[in-house]
Image (cartoon, rainbow, N blue to C red; front, side, top):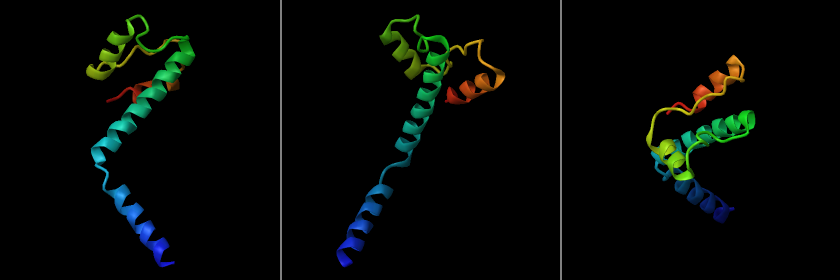
Length: 87
């Protein structure tokens, strides 16, 4: 029992030592990716598919402008994507 509690306390200290800003960055990227998947499911194309892949990656990483939201979505769908693409 002593060794079990020792390993448990070590794993807790390791998980708490991760820097919080990195966690939030990954979380935002995951939410943005969900929005990108919804756009691709609705239109058949990923966001900014009219650009070459390098240019699309640059837009995603450097601009605060969200990709166009498809008009065919309901108001709730548009609101959901707006929240997904908020930085």
